[in-house]
Amino acid sequence: MIRLPAVAGQFYPADGGELRSLIADLSSPAADVQPYRALAAIVPHAGYVYSGAVAAQTFKRLDIPSQVVVIGPNHHGTGADLALMREGSWRMPMGEVNINSALADNLLSGGVFSADYTAHVPEHSLEVQIPFLQYFAAELEIVPICASYITYEECRRAGEELARVIKAWPQPVLMVASTDMTHYESRNIAGRKDRLALECIENLDSEALYSTVIREKISMCGFIPVTIVLTAAVLLGASRAELVRYSDSGEVSGDIGQVVGYAGLVVS
Image (tube, rainbow, N blue to C red; front, side, top):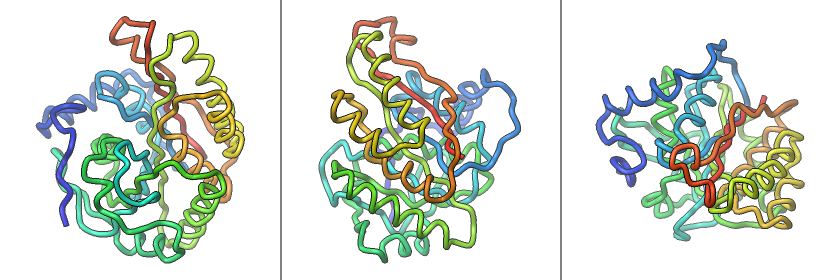
């Protein structure tokens, strides 16, 4: 089973060479740091013109292993609540990326995640991360998971299952949570709301993140994936979450009356 790109030529270039060159440009302003092995990355998923620099400069920090679990929000409402594509490959402009079916089956074995291809067909939140992973990783296999709205208890169980499988897996696995931050508020309001959410992440407190997003009405589209990944990371021994960069769409558009916030964090 081959998943074809849904947003190539829209969110990022459809030509592989052009895409590789763009990622090199987006990552070049970042300070040269020795890449290090981390448990998780939290990165945005807008068009590269808006959030590509945040994502690229976050991924550049990482020594990315060959196996990555990518969890993003389901923007379309199709498929299972926690929809995992268990086999096949993703055809991308920079080459095909295979799904690690053995790792996928281990995640499915606990009954928390569901094998579901349909949720992935139109979804962009995972797709836009793949070129960055291809660029920065020497080898790459993925397990893609689309997450719909679920309760905190369901997030906690998913995080526990993710941690259990990764802990038992013989090779390192990176978790990637895909999210944008506040949507279509003024820069001042978006910055204030996003700071509340980011403080919860920096404190490694997934329950506080979930409740804060609900209570403060923060339109953070991927707070479910972040809650799951943060829960798993803590169980795997995470001790810090570092904010690499925060920006908003107004930096590109010039419109600060209605912005979308973008944050890149590394959890280790």
